[in-house]
Amino acid sequence: MRDASCVTHGENTGALDGVMDETDAAMTAGSDPGGRPRDPGGAAELADAARSGDRRAFERLVVMYQEGIYRMAYARLQNVSDAQDVVQEVFLNAYRTIGTLRDPALIRAWLYRIALNRVRDVVRRRKVLGFFGLGAQTEPEDHPHPGPDSFDRMASRAFWERLNAFLEALPAREREVFRLRFVDELSIPEICSVLGKNESTVKTHLYRAVEKFRRTSFASGTGGDPSRGES
Amino acid sequence: MNEKSRGHLDPDRMAASVVDARELTVEEREHLEACAECSRQRERLLSSLGALSRDAAGFTPGGPKRVVLPSEAYPRPMARLMSWSMGFAGAAALVVLAGVYLLARIVTGPVQEADMSRLAMEAHQDKALLAEVQKLEDDPLPEPYAGIIPEPAGVPDDEFFDFLIPPDAGPKGGKT
Image (cartoon, rainbow over all chains, first blue to last red):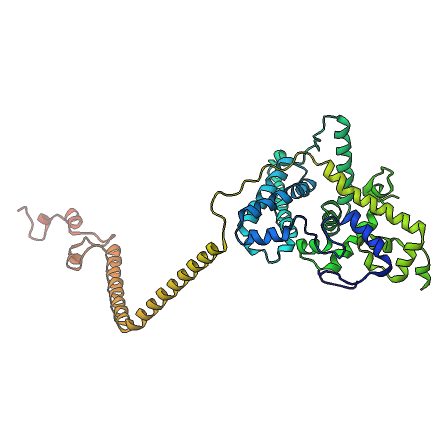
């Protein structure tokens, strides 16, 4: 490990520049090749304006990120209604506290951090309701798919079941880091910011999770049980 | 280049190349560029990982509802400054009140000592009164009536003696 902090890498990578470009093009939709969060649509400027009281700028941030945060919440809660509630709460909370955002460039990580906390609240609430036998209304759904085709529904169910089986087999830290990186497409610095961990810790968890992923049917395309980690 | 770096990338290094290719050594990078097998494995792994987010997005039903923001005025920095000002003003008022209270305590200290001695005297009187009440509860008859109470139980009274020895049956004899 060369760097234990969540800072931008700026050095020349030499012979692997082409490989790195490919890596970033394939997987780091939210970051530039150096790992710095990319700024689609001038998010940093919008966040800065929103901090200064520009409501329009905040509304544009909502439009920019609500889909991603909804998908992030659904991937963890797998309940449409709960995910929609999380999106509402995240932006309501952000609207009231955006003055505390220190680095506008990390607006996406900041929003995801709020979202992750709201998701944890929902999970805790489910546990409490489940303890009292009242959890039926908030349990995960059967992965409905918007398409009319029953094949879509089956494919959706199969995907989520395989992904959940793989993720549940991972330790909690590896699971969360892997999700943020490869399902939510956050950059490593953004993950550091969301989880409050340093870069070397995040990368270590990612190495382990990716190595386990490599041995699953996701990577081999065999369709086996991903939780067993077979080749 | 050591022995290990001349061979294919091991699984850990392959994972490292996917997580952050800059973690590889120069030898590993050169090998990855030259070795078709390692390069193919890496591409396959990258493709599988990239497909995760695409599939997750595609298989996510529904979508976010329209976010409703509060209708109240946006919390502008000036408003936050005002709220800070109000907070400072409140804190200052509390400090002033606390100072006035402490000052009053210092100034009125001797008076309070006099009050304390008066309170102690009243407490002593209350205690004596309570003792008297307790005594009355134990023996409700006042002292002047103590001599006319009946004889203690077990001791025959005059009426009893009169019954045993009628007054007209005395040594003088005959009825009166």
